[in-house]
Length: 359
Ligand code: PMP
Image (cartoon, rainbow, N blue to C red; front, side, top):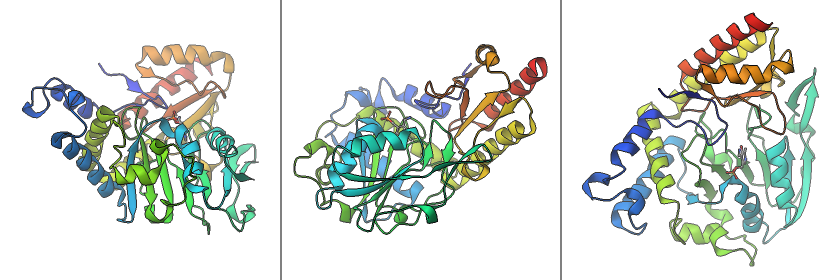
C-alpha cells in the first residue's frame, strides 16, 4: 500500500507517473537501455527533453519571449545565480522579506550587490500576514524585485502578484503549477523541482529574453542563463533522469486537465483542511485568511506535549511526514498536486478522531 505523503519536499509524486517510470526503467521504448543510461546528446534523449519543455510551456502558457532552463543546484543555487546574472549593469535590487526562504535569498544576494530589504511580514490579530504593497518602500532604480510567492515553512502565500516597475523575480518552488499564473508579469521565475515538478536534482528557471545580457563578468558559465539558453540547458550533463521524470509529471498534469483542473482540486483540498482546523478548538493555523498557503498548511495542537503522539499515530494510519519544519516546530501538511483529495479526507478524519480522544 502507498501511504499518504504530506512531505514538504521531496514530496509525493503521482502513482501513475512512478508506475510508468517503473515500466520503462530497464528498457526505455525498446532501446534495450534505461533512459538514465543514454547520452544527453542522443536524439532520443533530446526528444524527451524537448517534449518536457513543450508540455511545460503549454501547462503554464509561457510566452515565446521566455527561455525555459532545466538546471541543477536546487532553488538555493538560484539565490546566487540570480544576482550574478542580473546585477552586472546595475548592482541594486529590492528583496521582499516574508519568511525563511526569502531571507535565505536575501543573505546570498547581499554578497553581490546593494540589497534594499522590504520587511513585508506582519501580524494581524495574532496571525501572520503579508503587508499591503502600498506600504512597501521600493527603490527607484532597482535592477529587479525578488519575492518568495509561497513561504513553504511558514505556510504564508501572496494573495496576488505585486505590481513593480523593475522586473519581478519569483521563487515559485512550492507553488508552481498549483494554480494558474500569468508568466508575462514576471522577469524570471524559478523553482526547485522536488515539490510540484518531479524529483530533486532539477531546478526550473523561466527567464525573459531581455534579462539575458545583464550578468556580472565573473559569473561561472554553468550559472549563466545566456549560456544555458544558448546550449538548451546542456552546457554540461544535465540531471537527465529528473528531467525525464518531470516530463512524465507534465504529461500526467495535462491528462488531469492542466493547471486549471488541478487548481480546483487543490482548492477543495485546502478548503477541507482549513475549514476543519477553523471549526476545531483543538487545532490552530497561525496565518491570516488572505495569506494562507494553498500548498503548505501549518497547524498546532492545543497541547504541544501531544505532538509526538500525534505523529506516531498518524504514521500508523499511513499519514506520513506531518511534522513542521525543524526551525518552527508544530505540524505541517503539504498538499501538493500529487496528494489526492482522499489523502486530505483521511487526514481530517484522523485529526478529528485524535482530537476527540485527547481534546
Ligand atoms: N525556496 C523555497 C520556497 C523552498 O521551499 C525551498 C525548499 N524547501 C527552497 C527555496 C530551497 O530549495 P532547494 O533545496 O532546492 O535548494
